[in-house]
Length: 119
Image (cartoon, rainbow, N blue to C red; front, side, top):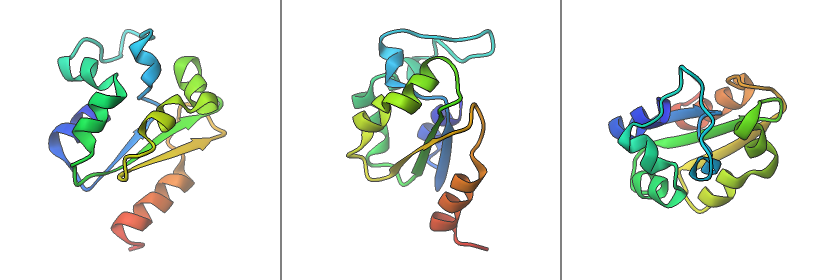
């Protein structure tokens, strides 16, 4: 939901934690609380479509994945497929950390400090 909202609303910054994977173009793992089937959700599964939405956006994005995550997001942390697919987009930062499905506080603080100041 954070990614979809950020694409549509274009905030100054967006933190996308363990919710995006190019692996979704191959298989979709989802639980009963996942957002699946929304037209924009289906489009951004493909990195070239996501790039089209983000390249000209004023938003600075931080994408994170944890090595102690499960499923495709764990695969992302180790294989970094999405980071590689999106590496040429200047307003995307990829972060891999050793935690699970959490917001990595130190990385988020650093990101916020760079783009919003240390106030």
